[in-house]
Image (cartoon, rainbow over the protein chains, first blue to last red):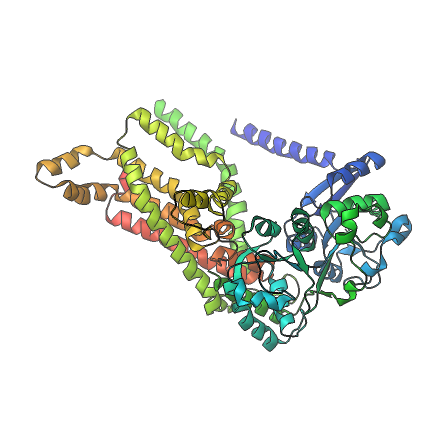
Length: 348
Length: 289
Protein backbone atom coordinates (compact mmCIF):
# COMPACT_ATOMS: atom_id res chain seq x y z
CA UNK A 1 0.00 0.00 0.00
CA UNK A 2 2.62 2.49 1.12
CA UNK A 3 4.92 1.17 -1.53
CA UNK A 4 2.43 1.63 -4.35
CA UNK A 5 1.83 5.20 -3.25
CA UNK A 6 5.51 5.95 -3.58
CA UNK A 7 5.54 4.38 -7.01
CA UNK A 8 2.61 6.58 -8.01
CA UNK A 9 4.49 9.63 -6.80
CA UNK A 10 7.60 8.66 -8.72
CA UNK A 11 5.53 8.02 -11.84
CA UNK A 12 3.91 11.43 -11.55
CA UNK A 13 7.29 13.12 -11.27
CA UNK A 14 8.62 11.26 -14.29
CA UNK A 15 5.52 12.09 -16.30
CA UNK A 16 5.90 15.77 -15.54
CA UNK A 17 9.53 15.71 -16.59
CA UNK A 18 8.57 13.97 -19.81
CA UNK A 19 5.87 16.54 -20.54
CA UNK A 20 8.23 19.47 -20.14
CA UNK A 21 10.76 17.73 -22.33
CA UNK A 22 8.14 17.30 -25.06
CA UNK A 23 7.20 20.95 -25.10
CA UNK A 24 10.78 21.95 -25.93
CA UNK A 25 12.25 22.00 -29.42
CA UNK A 26 10.47 21.23 -32.72
CA UNK A 27 8.61 24.54 -32.84
CA UNK A 28 10.28 27.57 -34.40
CA UNK A 29 11.32 29.73 -31.49
CA UNK A 30 13.48 32.66 -30.52
CA UNK A 31 14.48 33.16 -26.90
CA UNK A 32 15.07 36.84 -26.34
CA UNK A 33 16.63 37.92 -23.04
CA UNK A 34 16.75 41.58 -21.97
CA UNK A 35 15.23 44.19 -19.64
CA UNK A 36 11.43 44.25 -19.40
CA UNK A 37 9.64 46.25 -22.11
CA UNK A 38 12.87 47.00 -23.93
CA UNK A 39 11.69 45.68 -27.30
CA UNK A 40 8.34 47.16 -28.39
CA UNK A 41 5.49 44.66 -28.55
CA UNK A 42 4.34 45.66 -32.01
CA UNK A 43 7.81 44.96 -33.40
CA UNK A 44 7.82 41.49 -31.87
CA UNK A 45 4.30 40.80 -33.12
CA UNK A 46 5.22 41.80 -36.64
CA UNK A 47 8.32 39.59 -36.58
CA UNK A 48 6.25 36.62 -35.41
CA UNK A 49 3.66 37.22 -38.09
CA UNK A 50 6.20 37.60 -40.87
CA UNK A 51 8.41 34.63 -40.01
CA UNK A 52 6.18 32.31 -38.00
CA UNK A 53 8.85 32.24 -35.30
CA UNK A 54 7.53 32.49 -31.77
CA UNK A 55 9.42 34.96 -29.60
CA UNK A 56 9.86 34.02 -25.94
CA UNK A 57 10.69 37.23 -24.12
CA UNK A 58 12.48 36.72 -20.81
CA UNK A 59 13.56 39.71 -18.77
CA UNK A 60 16.30 40.47 -16.28
CA UNK A 61 16.71 43.37 -13.86
CA UNK A 62 20.44 43.92 -14.07
CA UNK A 63 23.30 43.15 -16.43
CA UNK A 64 24.96 41.15 -13.68
CA UNK A 65 21.92 38.91 -13.30
CA UNK A 66 22.03 38.25 -17.04
CA UNK A 67 25.70 37.31 -17.01
CA UNK A 68 25.27 35.01 -14.02
CA UNK A 69 22.51 33.16 -15.85
CA UNK A 70 24.45 32.98 -19.07
CA UNK A 71 27.36 31.51 -17.15
CA UNK A 72 25.13 28.87 -15.54
CA UNK A 73 23.74 27.79 -18.89
CA UNK A 74 27.20 27.90 -20.53
CA UNK A 75 25.92 30.38 -23.11
CA UNK A 76 22.89 28.25 -23.93
CA UNK A 77 19.11 28.61 -23.48
CA UNK A 78 18.96 32.12 -24.92
CA UNK A 79 19.27 33.01 -28.60
CA UNK A 80 19.60 36.75 -28.39
CA UNK A 81 20.55 39.05 -25.53
CA UNK A 82 20.45 42.85 -25.23
CA UNK A 83 22.77 44.15 -22.52
CA UNK A 84 25.20 46.97 -21.76
CA UNK A 85 28.67 47.53 -23.22
CA UNK A 86 30.85 46.74 -20.19
CA UNK A 87 29.08 43.47 -19.42
CA UNK A 88 29.28 42.39 -23.06
CA UNK A 89 33.02 42.86 -22.83
CA UNK A 90 33.14 40.49 -19.85
CA UNK A 91 30.83 38.02 -21.59
CA UNK A 92 33.06 37.98 -24.70
CA UNK A 93 36.18 37.51 -22.56
CA UNK A 94 34.49 34.63 -20.75
CA UNK A 95 33.74 32.99 -24.12
CA UNK A 96 29.97 33.27 -23.79
CA UNK A 97 29.33 35.15 -27.04
CA UNK A 98 29.38 33.74 -30.56
CA UNK A 99 30.47 35.54 -33.70
CA UNK A 100 27.76 36.88 -35.98
CA UNK A 101 27.32 35.42 -39.44
CA UNK A 102 26.99 38.66 -41.37
CA UNK A 103 26.01 36.88 -44.58
CA UNK A 104 22.71 36.18 -42.86
CA UNK A 105 22.17 39.82 -41.92
CA UNK A 106 21.57 41.69 -45.16
CA UNK A 107 20.73 44.90 -43.31
CA UNK A 108 23.99 44.89 -41.33
CA UNK A 109 25.23 47.79 -43.47
CA UNK A 110 22.37 49.95 -42.16
CA UNK A 111 24.22 50.39 -38.86
CA UNK A 112 25.62 53.89 -38.52
CA UNK A 113 29.39 53.33 -38.27
CA UNK A 114 29.72 56.00 -35.56
CA UNK A 115 28.11 53.45 -33.24
CA UNK A 116 30.55 50.68 -34.11
CA UNK A 117 34.09 49.69 -33.31
CA UNK A 118 33.85 50.36 -29.58
CA UNK A 119 36.04 48.78 -26.91
CA UNK A 120 33.81 45.77 -26.32
CA UNK A 121 33.79 44.74 -29.98
CA UNK A 122 36.45 46.64 -31.87
CA UNK A 123 36.11 44.56 -35.07
CA UNK A 124 32.28 44.44 -35.05
CA UNK A 125 32.33 40.67 -34.94
CA UNK A 126 29.91 40.02 -32.08
CA UNK A 127 27.39 42.79 -31.63
CA UNK A 128 24.70 44.95 -33.17
CA UNK A 129 24.14 48.30 -31.40
CA UNK A 130 20.58 48.63 -30.13
CA UNK A 131 20.30 51.66 -27.85
CA UNK A 132 23.20 54.11 -27.49
CA UNK A 133 22.85 56.91 -24.98
CA UNK A 134 24.54 59.85 -23.30
CA UNK A 135 23.48 60.83 -19.77
CA UNK A 136 22.79 64.56 -19.57
CA UNK A 137 21.79 67.21 -17.07
CA UNK A 138 18.28 68.62 -17.44
CA UNK A 139 16.94 71.48 -15.36
CA UNK A 140 13.90 73.63 -14.90
CA UNK A 141 14.99 77.26 -15.55
CA UNK A 142 12.01 78.56 -13.52
CA UNK A 143 13.40 76.97 -10.36
CA UNK A 144 17.13 77.49 -10.88
CA UNK A 145 18.95 80.82 -10.61
CA UNK A 146 22.42 79.77 -11.70
CA UNK A 147 23.85 78.95 -15.09
CA UNK A 148 24.37 75.21 -15.18
CA UNK A 149 27.28 74.25 -17.42
CA UNK A 150 28.49 70.89 -16.23
CA UNK A 151 28.74 68.32 -13.46
CA UNK A 152 30.50 70.88 -11.27
CA UNK A 153 27.34 73.00 -11.18
CA UNK A 154 25.55 70.23 -9.27
CA UNK A 155 27.73 71.13 -6.27
CA UNK A 156 26.47 74.73 -6.27
CA UNK A 157 25.18 75.70 -2.79
CA UNK A 158 22.06 77.31 -4.30
CA UNK A 159 20.83 73.85 -5.33
CA UNK A 160 20.49 72.59 -1.78
CA UNK A 161 18.10 69.64 -1.50
CA UNK A 162 16.87 69.97 -5.08
CA UNK A 163 19.01 67.70 -7.27
CA UNK A 164 17.97 64.26 -8.52
CA UNK A 165 20.57 61.84 -9.85
CA UNK A 166 20.63 58.28 -11.06
CA UNK A 167 21.40 55.68 -8.42
CA UNK A 168 24.22 54.15 -10.43
CA UNK A 169 27.48 53.82 -8.56
CA UNK A 170 30.04 54.04 -11.33
CA UNK A 171 28.26 56.88 -13.13
CA UNK A 172 28.07 59.06 -10.04
CA UNK A 173 31.59 58.39 -8.82
CA UNK A 174 32.62 58.79 -12.47
CA UNK A 175 31.26 62.30 -12.95
CA UNK A 176 32.96 63.29 -9.70
CA UNK A 177 36.25 62.02 -11.14
CA UNK A 178 35.51 64.10 -14.26
CA UNK A 179 35.13 67.29 -12.23
CA UNK A 180 38.62 66.59 -10.85
CA UNK A 181 39.98 66.11 -14.37
CA UNK A 182 40.26 62.31 -14.30
CA UNK A 183 38.90 59.61 -16.56
CA UNK A 184 35.82 57.59 -15.52
CA UNK A 185 38.03 54.54 -15.62
CA UNK A 186 41.08 55.66 -13.72
CA UNK A 187 42.63 52.98 -11.55
CA UNK A 188 44.58 55.55 -9.57
CA UNK A 189 43.31 54.83 -6.08
CA UNK A 190 44.29 58.21 -4.66
CA UNK A 191 42.23 59.92 -7.40
CA UNK A 192 39.21 57.78 -6.53
CA UNK A 193 39.79 58.50 -2.85
CA UNK A 194 39.81 62.24 -3.61
CA UNK A 195 36.61 61.87 -5.62
CA UNK A 196 35.08 60.20 -2.56
CA UNK A 197 35.91 63.24 -0.45
CA UNK A 198 34.36 65.52 -3.02
CA UNK A 199 31.29 63.34 -3.45
CA UNK A 200 30.49 63.72 0.25
CA UNK A 201 30.12 67.46 -0.34
CA UNK A 202 27.42 66.78 -2.94
CA UNK A 203 25.22 65.12 -0.33
CA UNK A 204 23.39 68.25 0.92
CA UNK A 205 22.17 68.98 -2.62
CA UNK A 206 20.72 65.55 -3.28
CA UNK A 207 16.96 65.31 -2.96
CA UNK A 208 16.51 61.91 -4.55
CA UNK A 209 18.54 59.03 -5.96
CA UNK A 210 16.59 56.95 -8.37
CA UNK A 211 17.08 54.46 -11.14
CA UNK A 212 13.74 54.47 -12.94
CA UNK A 213 11.48 57.31 -14.02
CA UNK A 214 13.76 59.95 -12.49
CA UNK A 215 12.35 62.46 -14.99
CA UNK A 216 9.00 62.30 -13.15
CA UNK A 217 10.53 64.05 -10.12
CA UNK A 218 11.62 66.89 -12.40
CA UNK A 219 8.26 67.10 -14.13
CA UNK A 220 6.33 67.15 -10.82
CA UNK A 221 8.61 69.86 -9.40
CA UNK A 222 10.00 67.66 -6.61
CA UNK A 223 13.50 68.47 -7.92
CA UNK A 224 14.76 71.30 -10.11
CA UNK A 225 17.88 69.69 -11.60
CA UNK A 226 18.30 66.11 -12.74
CA UNK A 227 21.11 64.01 -14.15
CA UNK A 228 19.33 61.57 -16.45
CA UNK A 229 19.75 58.71 -18.90
CA UNK A 230 19.03 59.53 -22.54
CA UNK A 231 15.54 58.04 -22.63
CA UNK A 232 14.62 60.01 -19.51
CA UNK A 233 15.96 63.22 -21.07
CA UNK A 234 13.74 62.68 -24.10
CA UNK A 235 10.70 61.97 -21.91
CA UNK A 236 11.34 65.01 -19.70
CA UNK A 237 11.58 67.29 -22.75
CA UNK A 238 8.43 65.83 -24.17
CA UNK A 239 6.56 66.62 -20.95
CA UNK A 240 7.96 70.12 -20.66
CA UNK A 241 9.75 71.69 -23.65
CA UNK A 242 10.93 74.56 -21.44
CA UNK A 243 13.40 72.34 -19.62
CA UNK A 244 17.02 73.11 -20.46
CA UNK A 245 19.45 70.36 -21.47
CA UNK A 246 23.13 70.67 -20.58
CA UNK A 247 25.98 68.84 -22.30
CA UNK A 248 28.40 68.83 -19.35
CA UNK A 249 31.56 70.73 -20.17
CA UNK A 250 33.79 68.27 -18.30
CA UNK A 251 33.08 65.61 -20.92
CA UNK A 252 30.25 63.31 -21.82
CA UNK A 253 29.62 59.79 -20.70
CA UNK A 254 28.55 57.36 -23.34
CA UNK A 255 27.02 53.92 -23.28
CA UNK A 256 25.62 51.41 -25.73
CA UNK A 257 23.20 48.59 -25.14
CA UNK A 258 23.84 46.04 -27.85
CA UNK A 259 22.51 42.73 -29.14
CA UNK A 260 24.58 39.57 -29.16
CA UNK A 261 24.09 35.85 -29.70
CA UNK A 262 25.30 33.62 -26.83
CA UNK A 263 27.89 30.95 -27.64
CA UNK A 264 25.50 28.00 -27.39
CA UNK A 265 22.29 29.61 -28.60
CA UNK A 266 19.81 26.87 -29.58
CA UNK A 267 18.17 28.79 -32.47
CA UNK A 268 21.03 30.64 -34.07
CA UNK A 269 19.31 31.02 -37.44
CA UNK A 270 16.27 32.65 -35.90
CA UNK A 271 18.48 35.05 -33.98
CA UNK A 272 20.08 36.19 -37.25
CA UNK A 273 16.63 36.60 -38.78
CA UNK A 274 15.60 38.83 -35.89
CA UNK A 275 18.73 40.95 -36.17
CA UNK A 276 18.12 41.44 -39.87
CA UNK A 277 14.49 42.31 -39.16
CA UNK A 278 15.19 45.04 -36.60
CA UNK A 279 17.97 46.56 -38.72
CA UNK A 280 15.39 47.38 -41.36
CA UNK A 281 15.01 51.17 -41.59
CA UNK A 282 11.31 51.40 -40.90
CA UNK A 283 11.40 48.91 -38.02
CA UNK A 284 14.50 50.58 -36.56
CA UNK A 285 12.69 53.93 -36.50
CA UNK A 286 9.72 52.35 -34.76
CA UNK A 287 11.99 50.89 -32.07
CA UNK A 288 13.98 54.07 -31.39
CA UNK A 289 10.91 56.26 -31.26
CA UNK A 290 9.36 53.94 -28.68
CA UNK A 291 12.31 53.29 -26.39
CA UNK A 292 13.60 56.89 -26.57
CA UNK A 293 17.26 56.11 -27.10
CA UNK A 294 19.57 57.36 -29.85
CA UNK A 295 18.96 55.70 -33.19
CA UNK A 296 21.95 53.61 -34.37
CA UNK A 297 20.32 52.75 -37.69
CA UNK A 298 21.11 55.22 -40.47
CA UNK A 299 18.46 53.77 -42.76
CA UNK A 300 15.93 54.61 -40.06
CA UNK A 301 16.63 58.35 -39.79
CA UNK A 302 14.22 59.25 -42.58
CA UNK A 303 11.38 57.38 -40.85
CA UNK A 304 11.78 59.02 -37.45
CA UNK A 305 8.98 61.38 -36.45
CA UNK A 306 10.04 65.00 -36.76
CA UNK A 307 10.27 65.83 -33.05
CA UNK A 308 12.50 62.79 -32.61
CA UNK A 309 14.91 63.81 -35.33
CA UNK A 310 16.21 66.40 -32.92
CA UNK A 311 16.40 64.39 -29.72
CA UNK A 312 17.27 60.94 -31.02
CA UNK A 313 19.89 61.67 -33.64
CA UNK A 314 23.00 63.13 -32.11
CA UNK A 315 25.62 64.73 -34.29
CA UNK A 316 28.65 62.61 -35.06
CA UNK A 317 30.93 65.11 -33.33
CA UNK A 318 29.46 64.39 -29.92
CA UNK A 319 30.19 60.68 -29.96
CA UNK A 320 34.01 60.69 -29.95
CA UNK A 321 33.92 63.04 -26.96
CA UNK A 322 31.91 60.52 -25.01
CA UNK A 323 33.77 58.19 -22.72
CA UNK A 324 32.57 54.70 -21.87
CA UNK A 325 32.48 53.47 -18.33
CA UNK A 326 34.52 50.30 -18.43
CA UNK A 327 35.34 47.64 -15.93
CA UNK A 328 38.26 48.58 -13.68
CA UNK A 329 40.40 46.28 -11.54
CA UNK A 330 38.99 44.70 -8.39
CA UNK A 331 40.79 47.11 -6.06
CA UNK A 332 39.37 50.17 -7.84
CA UNK A 333 35.92 48.55 -8.03
CA UNK A 334 35.93 47.97 -4.28
CA UNK A 335 37.01 51.55 -3.65
CA UNK A 336 34.25 52.90 -5.92
CA UNK A 337 31.76 50.94 -3.87
CA UNK A 338 33.24 52.15 -0.60
CA UNK A 339 33.08 55.85 -1.49
CA UNK A 340 29.57 55.41 -2.89
CA UNK A 341 28.41 53.67 0.29
CA UNK A 342 29.89 56.50 2.36
CA UNK A 343 28.14 59.01 0.08
CA UNK A 344 24.79 57.30 0.58
CA UNK A 345 25.31 57.19 4.33
CA UNK A 346 25.92 60.96 4.26
CA UNK A 347 22.59 61.57 2.51
CA UNK A 348 20.16 61.04 5.37
CA UNK B 1 -7.93 -1.44 17.94
CA UNK B 2 -8.24 2.30 18.08
CA UNK B 3 -4.72 2.67 19.31
CA UNK B 4 -3.44 0.47 16.54
CA UNK B 5 -5.19 2.37 13.77
CA UNK B 6 -4.04 5.67 15.14
CA UNK B 7 -0.49 4.41 15.02
CA UNK B 8 -0.91 3.42 11.44
CA UNK B 9 -2.25 6.86 10.56
CA UNK B 10 0.73 8.45 12.16
CA UNK B 11 3.21 6.52 10.07
CA UNK B 12 1.26 7.38 6.92
CA UNK B 13 1.37 11.03 7.83
CA UNK B 14 5.09 10.76 8.16
CA UNK B 15 5.36 9.77 4.50
CA UNK B 16 3.26 12.79 3.65
CA UNK B 17 5.86 15.18 5.01
CA UNK B 18 8.78 13.67 3.08
CA UNK B 19 8.34 16.09 0.16
CA UNK B 20 8.30 18.97 2.61
CA UNK B 21 11.54 17.79 4.22
CA UNK B 22 13.16 17.31 0.83
CA UNK B 23 11.98 20.74 -0.24
CA UNK B 24 13.33 22.34 2.92
CA UNK B 25 16.67 20.55 2.64
CA UNK B 26 17.13 21.48 -1.00
CA UNK B 27 15.80 24.99 -1.09
CA UNK B 28 16.40 26.29 2.43
CA UNK B 29 19.40 24.46 3.88
CA UNK B 30 21.19 24.08 0.55
CA UNK B 31 21.43 27.79 -0.26
CA UNK B 32 22.32 28.59 3.34
CA UNK B 33 25.27 26.21 3.29
CA UNK B 34 26.27 27.55 -0.12
CA UNK B 35 26.18 31.08 1.25
CA UNK B 36 28.19 30.15 4.31
CA UNK B 37 30.89 28.54 2.16
CA UNK B 38 30.86 31.48 -0.25
CA UNK B 39 31.46 33.93 2.59
CA UNK B 40 34.92 32.43 3.17
CA UNK B 41 36.03 32.62 -0.48
CA UNK B 42 37.60 35.49 -2.43
CA UNK B 43 36.18 37.53 -5.28
CA UNK B 44 37.65 37.02 -8.71
CA UNK B 45 39.25 39.98 -10.46
CA UNK B 46 36.54 40.41 -13.09
CA UNK B 47 33.68 38.03 -12.62
CA UNK B 48 32.76 35.29 -10.18
CA UNK B 49 34.49 33.76 -7.20
CA UNK B 50 37.90 32.24 -6.62
CA UNK B 51 38.24 29.20 -4.41
CA UNK B 52 40.75 30.75 -2.06
CA UNK B 53 39.97 30.66 1.64
CA UNK B 54 39.93 34.03 3.39
CA UNK B 55 38.54 35.69 6.48
CA UNK B 56 38.88 39.14 4.95
CA UNK B 57 35.17 39.36 4.11
CA UNK B 58 34.31 39.21 7.79
CA UNK B 59 37.09 41.60 8.75
CA UNK B 60 35.90 44.05 6.11
CA UNK B 61 32.44 44.26 7.72
CA UNK B 62 34.01 46.08 10.63
CA UNK B 63 35.30 48.93 8.50
CA UNK B 64 33.28 51.95 9.66
CA UNK B 65 31.68 52.56 6.24
CA UNK B 66 30.10 49.11 6.22
CA UNK B 67 29.57 48.62 9.94
CA UNK B 68 27.59 51.85 10.03
CA UNK B 69 24.92 50.29 7.84
CA UNK B 70 24.31 47.73 10.60
CA UNK B 71 23.97 50.51 13.15
CA UNK B 72 21.61 52.47 10.87
CA UNK B 73 19.50 49.37 10.27
CA UNK B 74 19.43 48.57 13.96
CA UNK B 75 18.34 52.12 14.77
CA UNK B 76 15.53 52.02 12.24
CA UNK B 77 14.44 48.55 13.37
CA UNK B 78 14.39 49.51 17.05
CA UNK B 79 12.42 52.70 16.39
CA UNK B 80 9.98 50.85 14.18
CA UNK B 81 9.48 48.20 16.84
CA UNK B 82 8.98 50.77 19.61
CA UNK B 83 6.38 52.71 17.62
CA UNK B 84 4.47 49.63 16.46
CA UNK B 85 4.39 48.47 20.08
CA UNK B 86 3.05 51.83 21.32
CA UNK B 87 0.38 51.92 18.64
CA UNK B 88 -0.28 48.20 18.35
CA UNK B 89 -0.65 47.36 22.04
CA UNK B 90 -3.74 49.50 22.76
CA UNK B 91 -5.15 48.50 19.38
CA UNK B 92 -4.81 44.76 20.01
CA UNK B 93 -5.87 45.10 23.63
CA UNK B 94 -9.11 46.93 22.94
CA UNK B 95 -9.79 44.81 19.90
CA UNK B 96 -9.92 41.79 22.21
CA UNK B 97 -12.59 43.54 24.27
CA UNK B 98 -14.97 44.04 21.34
CA UNK B 99 -18.06 41.94 20.68
CA UNK B 100 -17.42 38.88 18.55
CA UNK B 101 -18.93 40.68 15.54
CA UNK B 102 -16.74 43.71 16.20
CA UNK B 103 -13.69 41.46 16.45
CA UNK B 104 -14.42 39.92 13.08
CA UNK B 105 -14.83 43.30 11.43
CA UNK B 106 -11.62 44.64 12.98
CA UNK B 107 -9.73 41.50 12.04
CA UNK B 108 -10.86 41.94 8.45
CA UNK B 109 -9.80 45.58 8.45
CA UNK B 110 -6.36 44.67 9.78
CA UNK B 111 -5.90 41.96 7.17
CA UNK B 112 -7.39 43.69 4.12
CA UNK B 113 -4.21 45.67 3.28
CA UNK B 114 -2.37 42.37 2.78
CA UNK B 115 -4.55 41.75 -0.27
CA UNK B 116 -2.55 44.43 -2.05
CA UNK B 117 1.13 44.04 -2.77
CA UNK B 118 3.29 45.85 -0.19
CA UNK B 119 5.21 47.61 -2.94
CA UNK B 120 2.05 49.14 -4.35
CA UNK B 121 0.95 50.28 -0.89
CA UNK B 122 4.28 52.07 -0.52
CA UNK B 123 3.61 53.93 -3.75
CA UNK B 124 0.36 55.03 -2.13
CA UNK B 125 2.40 56.74 0.57
CA UNK B 126 4.36 58.57 -2.12
CA UNK B 127 1.13 60.14 -3.35
CA UNK B 128 0.34 61.26 0.18
CA UNK B 129 3.82 62.57 1.02
CA UNK B 130 5.09 64.13 -2.18
CA UNK B 131 5.40 67.87 -2.77
CA UNK B 132 1.94 69.30 -3.36
CA UNK B 133 0.59 65.88 -2.49
CA UNK B 134 -2.43 65.06 -0.32
CA UNK B 135 -0.79 65.84 3.00
CA UNK B 136 0.72 69.09 1.75
CA UNK B 137 -2.64 70.22 0.38
CA UNK B 138 -4.37 69.31 3.63
CA UNK B 139 -1.83 71.21 5.77
CA UNK B 140 -1.95 74.24 3.51
CA UNK B 141 -5.76 74.09 3.36
CA UNK B 142 -5.87 74.16 7.15
CA UNK B 143 -3.49 77.11 7.13
CA UNK B 144 -0.84 75.23 9.12
CA UNK B 145 1.85 75.63 6.47
CA UNK B 146 2.14 78.16 3.66
CA UNK B 147 4.33 76.28 1.18
CA UNK B 148 4.85 72.62 0.25
CA UNK B 149 7.00 70.74 2.74
CA UNK B 150 9.63 68.29 1.62
CA UNK B 151 8.13 65.34 3.42
CA UNK B 152 9.05 62.57 1.05
CA UNK B 153 12.54 61.05 0.95
CA UNK B 154 13.28 61.67 4.59
CA UNK B 155 13.83 59.50 7.64
CA UNK B 156 10.33 60.14 9.03
CA UNK B 157 8.81 59.05 5.70
CA UNK B 158 10.75 55.78 5.85
CA UNK B 159 9.72 55.28 9.47
CA UNK B 160 6.05 55.80 8.64
CA UNK B 161 6.34 53.26 5.83
CA UNK B 162 8.00 50.68 8.09
CA UNK B 163 5.48 51.14 10.89
CA UNK B 164 2.62 50.95 8.43
CA UNK B 165 3.94 47.76 6.84
CA UNK B 166 4.64 45.93 10.10
CA UNK B 167 1.91 47.18 12.44
CA UNK B 168 -0.52 44.33 11.63
CA UNK B 169 1.96 41.76 12.95
CA UNK B 170 2.12 43.54 16.29
CA UNK B 171 -1.64 44.00 16.48
CA UNK B 172 -2.34 40.35 15.77
CA UNK B 173 0.25 39.14 18.29
CA UNK B 174 -1.14 41.39 21.05
CA UNK B 175 -4.71 40.55 20.13
CA UNK B 176 -4.16 36.82 20.34
CA UNK B 177 -2.86 36.98 23.92
CA UNK B 178 -5.32 39.64 25.04
CA UNK B 179 -8.18 37.53 23.82
CA UNK B 180 -7.08 34.58 25.94
CA UNK B 181 -6.43 36.81 28.92
CA UNK B 182 -8.29 35.72 32.07
CA UNK B 183 -10.08 38.96 32.96
CA UNK B 184 -11.14 37.56 36.31
CA UNK B 185 -7.52 37.92 37.43
CA UNK B 186 -7.68 41.63 36.69
CA UNK B 187 -10.99 41.85 38.55
CA UNK B 188 -9.45 40.01 41.49
CA UNK B 189 -6.60 42.51 41.60
CA UNK B 190 -9.09 45.36 41.57
CA UNK B 191 -11.14 43.71 44.34
CA UNK B 192 -7.99 43.46 46.41
CA UNK B 193 -7.53 47.21 46.16
CA UNK B 194 -5.27 47.72 43.16
CA UNK B 195 -5.89 50.88 41.15
CA UNK B 196 -6.64 50.52 37.42
CA UNK B 197 -3.05 51.41 36.60
CA UNK B 198 -1.62 49.03 39.19
CA UNK B 199 -3.78 46.19 37.94
CA UNK B 200 -2.74 46.92 34.37
CA UNK B 201 0.95 47.06 35.19
CA UNK B 202 1.10 44.05 37.48
CA UNK B 203 -1.45 41.74 35.90
CA UNK B 204 -2.32 42.64 32.31
CA UNK B 205 1.16 43.55 31.10
CA UNK B 206 2.66 40.45 32.64
CA UNK B 207 0.04 38.14 31.23
CA UNK B 208 0.30 39.65 27.78
CA UNK B 209 4.11 39.64 27.82
CA UNK B 210 4.43 36.62 25.52
CA UNK B 211 2.32 38.43 22.95
CA UNK B 212 4.39 41.58 23.32
CA UNK B 213 7.58 39.60 22.84
CA UNK B 214 6.36 37.65 19.85
CA UNK B 215 5.09 40.91 18.35
CA UNK B 216 8.50 42.47 18.91
CA UNK B 217 10.21 39.53 17.21
CA UNK B 218 7.74 39.55 14.31
CA UNK B 219 8.32 43.26 13.72
CA UNK B 220 11.99 43.59 14.54
CA UNK B 221 13.33 40.81 12.35
CA UNK B 222 11.68 41.82 9.08
CA UNK B 223 12.49 45.48 9.72
CA UNK B 224 16.20 44.63 9.67
CA UNK B 225 15.84 43.43 6.12
CA UNK B 226 13.04 45.45 4.47
CA UNK B 227 15.20 47.57 2.22
CA UNK B 228 12.66 48.34 -0.49
CA UNK B 229 10.74 50.66 1.84
CA UNK B 230 13.91 52.66 2.51
CA UNK B 231 14.51 52.75 -1.23
CA UNK B 232 11.04 53.93 -2.19
CA UNK B 233 10.16 56.33 0.62
CA UNK B 234 13.77 57.33 1.32
CA UNK B 235 14.53 58.15 -2.31
CA UNK B 236 17.44 55.72 -2.38
CA UNK B 237 19.22 57.85 0.19
CA UNK B 238 19.34 55.26 2.96
CA UNK B 239 22.02 52.67 3.15
CA UNK B 240 20.74 49.79 5.24
CA UNK B 241 22.26 46.33 5.46
CA UNK B 242 19.75 45.07 2.90
CA UNK B 243 20.74 47.76 0.40
CA UNK B 244 24.41 47.09 0.98
CA UNK B 245 24.01 43.36 0.36
CA UNK B 246 22.07 44.03 -2.82
CA UNK B 247 24.72 46.47 -4.07
CA UNK B 248 27.49 44.00 -3.34
CA UNK B 249 25.72 41.38 -5.42
CA UNK B 250 24.64 43.44 -8.41
CA UNK B 251 27.03 46.35 -8.76
CA UNK B 252 30.28 45.58 -7.01
CA UNK B 253 29.99 41.86 -7.79
CA UNK B 254 31.65 40.94 -4.53
CA UNK B 255 29.48 37.92 -3.75
CA UNK B 256 31.69 36.60 -0.92
CA UNK B 257 31.36 39.92 0.91
CA UNK B 258 27.61 39.94 0.31
CA UNK B 259 27.47 36.42 1.79
CA UNK B 260 29.48 37.45 4.82
CA UNK B 261 27.10 40.37 5.43
CA UNK B 262 24.12 38.06 5.09
CA UNK B 263 25.62 35.53 7.49
CA UNK B 264 26.19 38.22 10.10
CA UNK B 265 22.66 39.54 9.59
CA UNK B 266 21.28 36.04 10.12
CA UNK B 267 23.36 35.55 13.24
CA UNK B 268 22.01 38.84 14.63
CA UNK B 269 18.40 37.94 13.94
CA UNK B 270 18.85 34.42 15.30
CA UNK B 271 20.23 36.00 18.43
CA UNK B 272 17.01 37.98 18.83
CA UNK B 273 14.97 34.79 18.52
CA UNK B 274 17.26 33.07 21.02
CA UNK B 275 16.81 35.91 23.51
CA UNK B 276 13.06 35.74 22.96
CA UNK B 277 13.10 32.03 23.74
CA UNK B 278 15.19 32.58 26.84
CA UNK B 279 13.04 35.40 28.15
CA UNK B 280 9.71 33.70 27.58
CA UNK B 281 11.03 30.45 28.99
CA UNK B 282 12.40 32.04 32.12
CA UNK B 283 9.06 33.70 32.81
CA UNK B 284 7.46 30.34 32.12
CA UNK B 285 4.67 31.90 30.07
CA UNK B 286 5.22 30.05 26.86
CA UNK B 287 2.04 28.03 27.23
CA UNK B 288 -0.10 31.14 26.91
CA UNK B 289 0.95 32.04 23.40
